[in-house]
Image 1 (cartoon, rainbow, N blue to C red):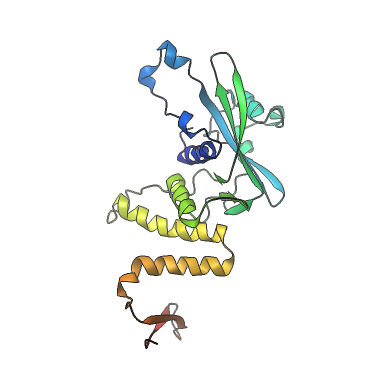
Image 2: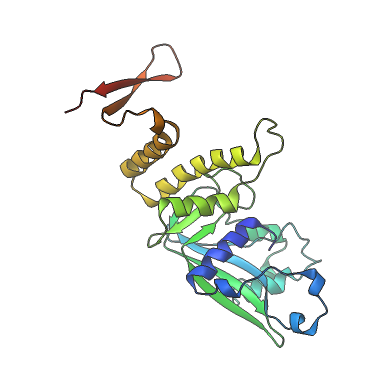
Length: 248
């Protein structure tokens, strides 16, 4: 459960299912207190999704050795017996359904195991958001999943993507964490628009967002500004043609 992607996916599923107020982070300093040890807790989770009529299950095992962790039992319990773990020789084989492309899914389900004082229970939480890769740091190929009937707007999905995927890179010496996150939010905004809107609307939304963020203060209040992409012969980059129209 250390993966931020898992935690954000779980948090969204819990909020949709009315369980957000029951979640808390574990506190090892309270281990040994009877009241604390009796609290139900999530001990495993994975994400199941149907994309292009193909069912995929993302089970993160953190490269644990097959014989040093009860992975077989966990996978079998999460899948309610659907996964034949006896046919799997290595936990890495369970991650073959990991995808890098963002996609709209027919459904997304977070499957969790909850250990109570007396038993381990399996629960399925229908949700509208998930992350399909474990390590990719780009918003455009992190396997972001959203359902057809998602209630998320572009900005809400953008924020979920950033919370799940953004990682500060200390190697970028000139950029603070805040600057890097702002840059990632722009990338995530475009990724969210492409998932939620059709192509023309997504393109318009991406341009609108960038223009509002970087150019809004330059636009005259009482004039219409037209922007047109203009190729430059012999150059790889394009130019932008600008016309400020006379007020009507």
